[in-house]
Image 1 (spheres, rainbow, N blue to C red):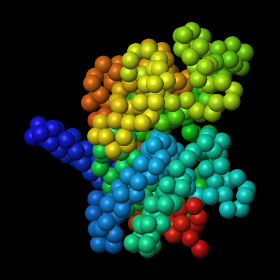
Image 2 (image 1 turned 120 degrees about the horizontal axis):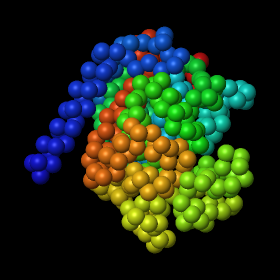
Image 3 (image 1 turned 90 degrees about the horizontal axis):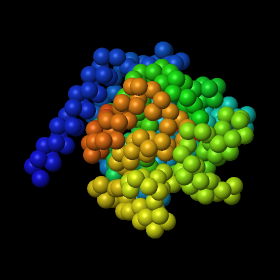
Length: 362
């Protein structure tokens, strides 16, 4: 027990030092965010005005995940799409009040996002306890972190003090969200613009090991790859047939776990088992390094996933994560997520604290 606690504290301390150093030295800047505040976030930001914030978020997330097992994956994707465009400012949460389709969540890459209702539920409870104090952007990054932990993923510290954006970035979301069929050069370019190197990019994409993927993102690989009218030639024949069975025309999603752990496709009974694993288990089978093991075998679900094997540096990182027992991946994923959560934040007098996460204050 002592050795486990010591190891946890060592990793936690490492993450804290890295985060504090990063935030005090310079703010993470994303394209279009040069005017954003460089004031650092901090751990005790809400101690005087809403000291129970993290307890409220954790309690609500436990209930949400108990009722909706896919919630951690949905919130992980939601926070990624928010932070990737304009920074972690809750701009992704703004609804299209004028019905003119100019907000981020209406951009094509974001139309399959889910989890907005979970953030609204948490916000409502926090508003009852601490009205007008806690930003939606802080709630989103905290809820996503807690969802990852509840899914069996690693804990990482989250600084607070973000403010919510008064604008949304539709055009940027249309052009700068990594595409499921993007090649490795495009993937690395977009992540590099946000300050992530090749290894950090590989670590963040490891978030694909939980949740479900819409078959619409896979079908073109199966029958009309790059407009050729033929399947993706890099997909192993047996895997191609398996994907076709899992994604018929009337099927909408595919479980990320059907192709892992055993070195072969999981049976339906195995699938059922993994879907029933308790969300409160300390180590849930899904959040390990199976994503990287599938890439090593050429069996990534998305073309963009498999492209990580097409670059020397990203392939080396995939190999490191695949052959380790999961410790390296979990540690580096935690650090990359902490870094992602600090991109382009609004602090001080910038932005606002929204009363409703989907609408600007009046």
